[in-house]
Length: 74
Image (cartoon, rainbow, N blue to C red; front, side):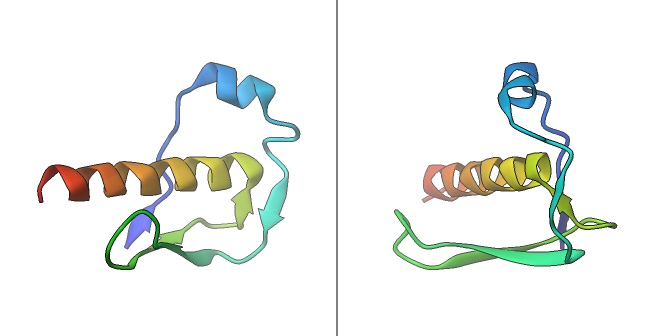
């Protein structure tokens, strides 16, 4: 299981509208990446209290890093 990473991009944080608003109340979500992969990759994330807009942004960012690592080691 993965946890939301601290994403330290100050410009992204400042430009996001209502970054601390909880937009997903569930404390556990699964993100699935299918494109541009040849196989489906899913990661489950946990965050006590739900996910804020910034958390969702960080989660998508984290997923893209996983995709890059998968391609690197092929």
